[in-house]
Image (tube, rainbow, N blue to C red; front, side, top):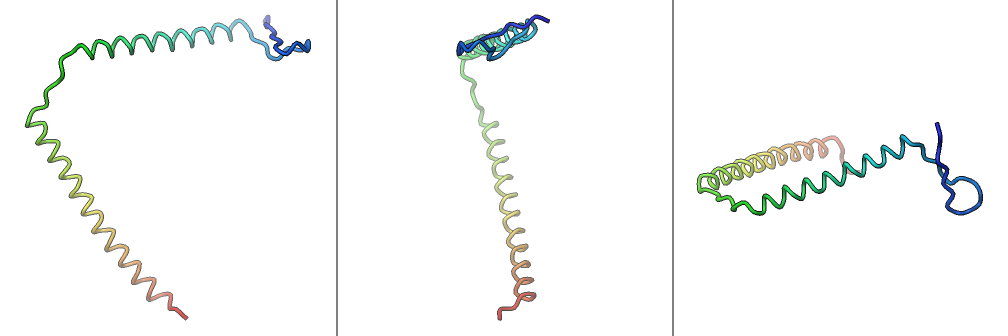
Length: 99
C-alpha cells in the first residue's frame, strides 16, 4: 500500500503519512457532514415558512395537570425524605453520644 508522506517542518522526515483509504474516509466524512448541514438547513427553512401552531385550551389544561402531578410527587418525596432524615437523626443521637 502506497503512503503519501507529508513533511511540514522541512527536516526531511515525514511528519505524518496518509494512505488512499484514509483520504477516501476523510473526504467521505466531510461530504457526510456538509450534506447533513444542508439537509438540516432546508428543513429549518421549510419549518419557518409553516404557520405557527395554535395551542388549544385543552392542551394547556393537560400540561397544567401534568405539572400539578409532578409538583405533588415532589412534595410527597420531600415529606418522605423528611421522615427518613428524622429517623437517621434519631438513630445517630441514640448510637453516638457526645462525650
